[in-house]
Image (cartoon, rainbow, N blue to C red; front, side, top):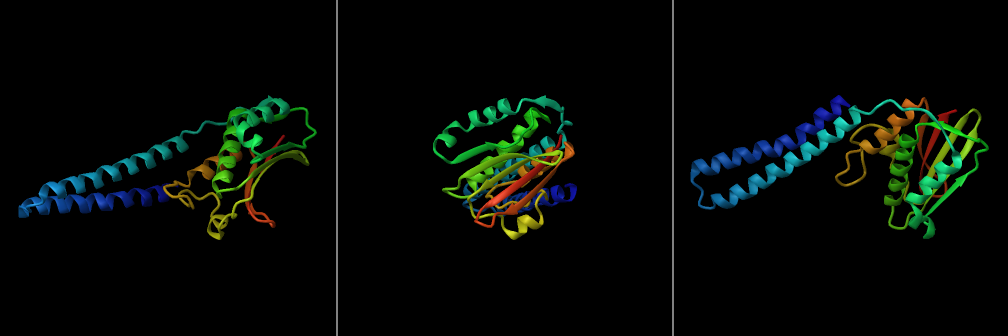
Length: 211
């Protein structure tokens, strides 16, 4: 992560440095259109500073993540809370939730796992203009499996090879930290998280949480 941060920080610094050099040279040469050059270069500098600030804010948020607080969770209540957040999508047949687990209780940090599911569902919707998403919850041995699948184009090979590497993203202006944070949350629960492409078409995320 540190290596990636260093690389990403250098990217905005280059246009900032070039803009400053252009500004100084234009002023020294007494360019007649100096006001225009000033406006353009300072706009570039401000834009890159904002990008740098956003980058560092995201990194600080990732670095400050707290350890999960495992509690006993009511399965019905948990599923209903997820459904309430995506009520419109469920009514429009864009999202389906199936709880096939036989457990009378789940054991995890409710807010943290809810954050993971919400992020992954949103990613699924954003994967394609008409993508639908399905959430499946089931038992796999002593673990709880949460499966989130979409009908989008699936993950590109590069993403599957570097699933949870920061700043590897297919989204415009994306940081690539979304999946990294989800993976971090699952890992801190002692669980596993895997990306895959469906045979039918689309992508999927498989999460296993110890119970």
